Length: 166
Image (tube, rainbow, N blue to C red; front, side):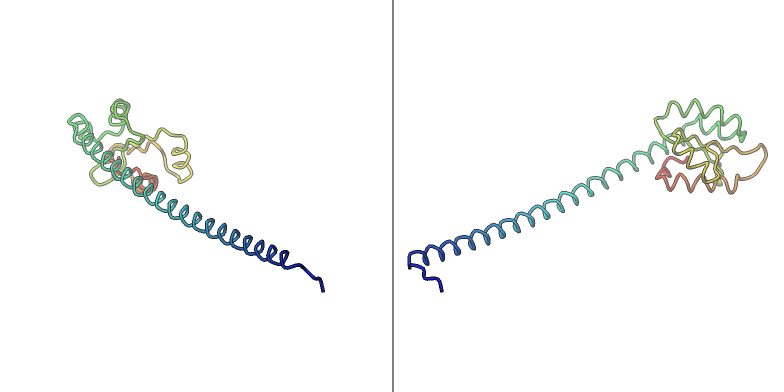
C-alpha cells in the first residue's frame, strides 16, 4: 500500500472537501436560478396572455360598436330598403372605402348575405376553397341566399370577424 505523510493526507482530504462543497454550491445555485427563471417566465407569460385577452376584448368591443354605428347610418338603412342587390353592391362600395375595416358584410334581416367585401387575398382564397364567393349577391326577387350565406357567415366567424357583420 502507498504510504502518505500526514500532511499529504490532510491536504487531500481538504481538497476533496473543498471540491465537494464547491460542486454542491454550484449545483444549488444553478437549481435556484433555473427555478427563478422558470417562475419569472411563467409569470411574464401569464401577464402577456392577460394583456392580450384584454386587448382582444377591447378590440372586439370597438369593432362591435363600429359595426353598430355603421348599421344605424341613415343612408345605409335607406340603401338596404331598396332590396336590390346591384344597387346595394354599387352604393356599399363607396361606403366601405370610407370605413376602416377589413371586412364589410351587408345582410338582410333574416341573415342572408347581400354584399360581402373581403380585400385580402388569403381570405379570398379561403372563401374560394370553401365554395364561397367574396361578393355574394342575391338575385332580384329571390329569397335568402341559403348555403352560400351560411358559408360566408361561418367563414367570417372562424376568422374572428363576426363583429363586423351588419
